[in-house]
Image (cartoon, rainbow, N blue to C red):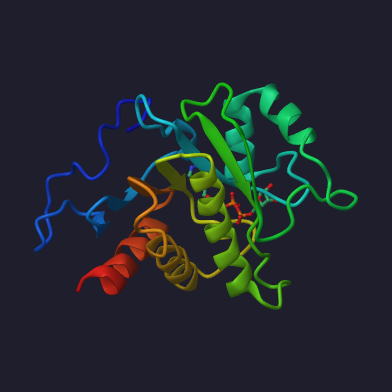
Length: 207
Ligand code: AR6
């Protein structure tokens, strides 16, 4: 759901042949993936341990895009918590493809999982790095007993990853964790990325 009253994800009325709502894909008897439009800073699941995944940079002290929006909404406590994450080398708190967790502070979600996707034109193994970013975010969530996780389109903004290729990596990575979460959401800001994600999920997950 959303703090702004957006209602439960997928409750849009139109249904697919499998009887599920559009944007709503069952991954296993216990797990659902939801694709929706929205602002990830407003996302939460009432009464649950939940996490939004921040597409951050290696320094982990904020930036533009979704990272900037998440830090603004979470308040200065988030930057202080990030600052206290130990550097693994000078200026690097979270290497590309890894993930770190902090509280959500003033966000409606209880936790933020910070990950770093690849810079598409610079990373010589961008696909592996993007897959690692999704997998390690979900591993960190699982280790912290978080049952509800929301992603944006990691690397699809400033970092320049092509949407269709990113959607394949994102959705196939989430599918690997089909027994580990109640719900994994993609909260997508723009119509074009939302439509690419929906098409890819239909391609990969419809029988
Ligand atoms: N809710 C959901 N999605 C959003 C929001 C939001 N509030 N704001 C932006 N997006 P980006 P990256 C979408 O650039 O490519 C930062 O400066 C956006 O439209 O945020 O991984 C970091 O500090 C796009 O589809 O992340 C890093 O330096 C997606 O989120 C760098 O950008 C990701 O775009 C990371 O670049």
